[in-house]
Amino acid sequence: MKTVSLSGSPRGGVGKKDAKELRANNRVPAVLYGGDEQMHFSVAESELDKVVFTPDVFLFTLDVDGKKVEAVLVDIQFHPVTDRVIHVDFLEVIEGKPVRLKLPVQTTGNALGVKNGGRLLTNYRRVTVLGLPKDFPDVVELDVTKLRIGQALRMKDIVFPGVTLLHDPEAVVVSVKTARGAIEDELEDEEDEEGEEGEGGEEGEGSEGGDDAEAKKEETAAE
Image (cartoon, rainbow, N blue to C red; front, side, top):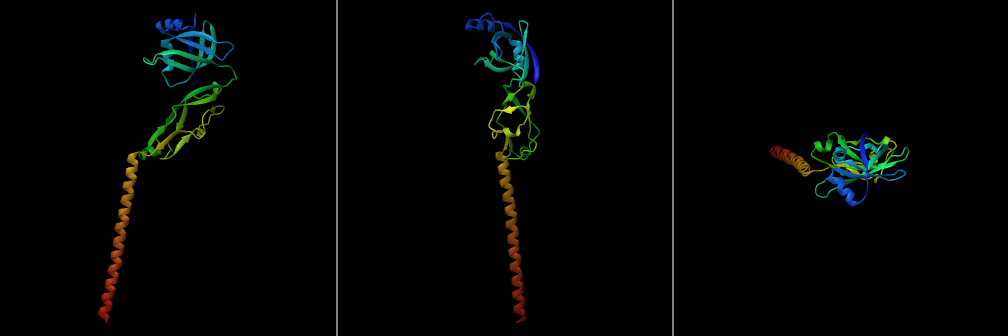
């Protein structure tokens, strides 16, 4: 996982009025839990935006009034209209203790099925995992190069040592579906093949009929 440092300031209060004042000063209320005690603090909105509005997942080194702890970001609240970050929750990372986190999914390669007219569908943009942060990859990378139309990659196909996926093993992560154009192309190909076979059959019957007629003529002449 990528690491980043973030500085915070202790909160004087934890009420709505205090939170409103913080946001007015471009700071975001935050809470850290998972350790011996909860810690309420605030971080600069500009610094937080750099790590929130990105697909990357980070391991944070939080520095709050001189106290440093490692943590992961587990929850973000956005303003329903402006999309500004209005609150964040951090979970303290304790050595040897697994954490639950969502990791981004990234596909690589150009699927064979897409080359043949199919459409690549991604059902999960992030997957939930359980494990130690040191074992987490930056992204869950899936190579779709060999996928044909009708084929898929499922949760059980994703394997990282020490990391457990918290999903149904049979759940489809990415798949290649048949597009309308691909169906029409296949139907046209089948019609062309049937047409060629039909023409060949008529020619064959005509040839056999011609041979029989010539044979009868020869028999009549002999008589």
